[in-house]
Image: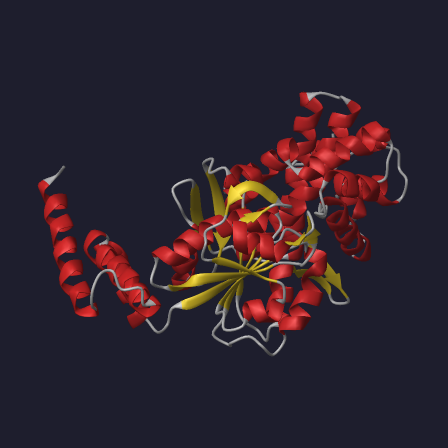
Length: 422
């Protein structure tokens, strides 16, 4: 044994013996005395053997600005991210130790899901086999979960955001920071609204940043190396968010181009539906690669059409081409779309059969994007997005997908000199 450890061990023994001698005979059966002995022993060992933990705790106690973190959502992605956030909240003094997680209450194997999570620290329904940190506490009421929190992580299907945010109206500290891990968009009377914009609007204007990337939840939970992108215009807050989310196997790049980061996360799910249809039709890798490329070009065009100051370099981050490729080969939208072609069942039927209560984002986003393009008379500029919508909602046979792309704008060459199309 190392001499330093030996000295530390004897210091612990000496301290404990001297202190416990003040509490009376060792064979005392007074419960209060027993409890005191136990607490003294534990604190003495922690103090001398793990001084780094004491240093973190002292910093937390002296740091009155430490933020309580609340995760709003507990599906497989929410639970996977809770494994990271729980560890970092304990590690860094900028955050309170306890992380609350809002869980939509349901019965799983005869028990309430919140009770199962809080006793076994496993989300048996959405992320079985992976232990959550013991400082992550499941709470069934969203307002109660968010009470006192000054850093909110939104990670739930985008169609549920309005109802959840309505429950939080007027109950959020104005100093709160929000971050959305939600991949989708919302269409309202005035046009396109990003989910981060919707959250900010509901919560009285609190800033809402975004995190998107090639992050399949089961692989993140298994601690397989990956990258992600945080979109945050505020440098100081970007550093704080990077600290909360980054670990050795989950590396974070922060960029200022928030809108493009979020649009990438939403639009790639439409393309993934197309990739799944190609797989269902067994058309091969060349065709699938073409779908991915054309989909990427429509994503770039959509972003530049509806938002200013789009940085094309953002599409080369994890939120862009990396997430697009991952989703087109391994995501749920691809899997369900393939089954849609093979089985002939409806999207709704397959969602219930294959997703264990989770929601599919691709078709819903295709619907919302279609409404926006139709209103702006731009459908002919986005033949892939339009075809996916028509297959999912208007009964267009999946076999017509490729035919719909024959006259894609990307296949038209316009001479810079003459302007003639070839």
